[in-house]
Image 1 (cartoon, rainbow, N blue to C red):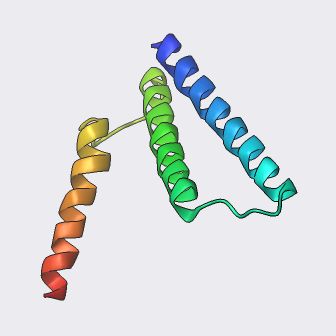
Image 2: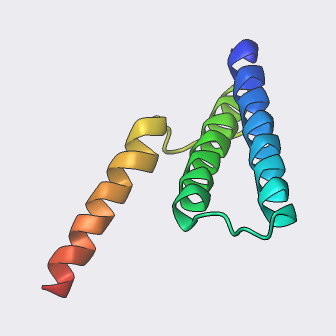
Length: 91
């Protein structure tokens, strides 16, 4: 489990550094980065941080998790059901 945490953290830091260098190169050339790339990176960053926090919290025995349904159920299925609820409420 320690290796999973370290690999997620290395990927997270590497992607952040890569995007920062890419933005710097574009800024030097007076070009704005695309919104699509920034949005995708924001989503990937969010998912990686959630995965890292989930793995880290499972190693801490002192943390009480009353609703430990798993990463996939809580963060992905709930968001789908929430979007469906809002869509049905709007109609």
